Length: 239
Image (cartoon, rainbow, N blue to C red; front, side, top):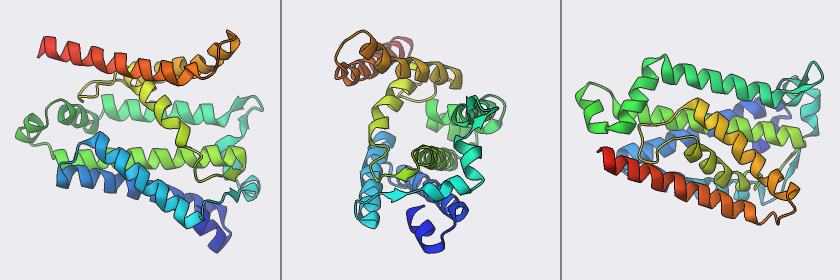
């Protein structure tokens, strides 16, 4: 968004460029996983550091004011309030959850995704193009991340190169607490949806209880370790 907006002065073109950049980053991540056999988590963390470095280099570590977004139709559409009460971020969260649920539970792409995650070799024997499914899944995640990044920046009316650094731990905790297996093949949109609310309530709850906010990261880490450990125990017993 930064480069395209400065070059063209168009918020809409900057938004499209932002989504395309996220789509490309996700696709490249998936391509690395499929073609080189790199574990997904390792590739994701590695490319995260790479793209973070690219952003810091391009922006020279400087932020960018986004007040021009207020004059665009994107502002009320993405971060406005429906009927003057309901934040559009909440509406978009519902929309994304419903769309993802549909494709995972009512479309062959979702069935293939679960199958590849559970047993990639079996998926190949059944005629599923496992590589294409993986790359497409990573590309979709990259697109969604870019969309979320733009929404947060538009809400603040300012872009910081390090704006999303604090969301990784929250995201992992929400996903694993929601029942998604780190080993693949298991997980639901509804579980992640509910878990994200639980995770979001932890920090305010700690502050309301009068405890130190530093406990938040410790609890998130504990949730991740316990969730993954339970998944490993269940997988070992039923495999």
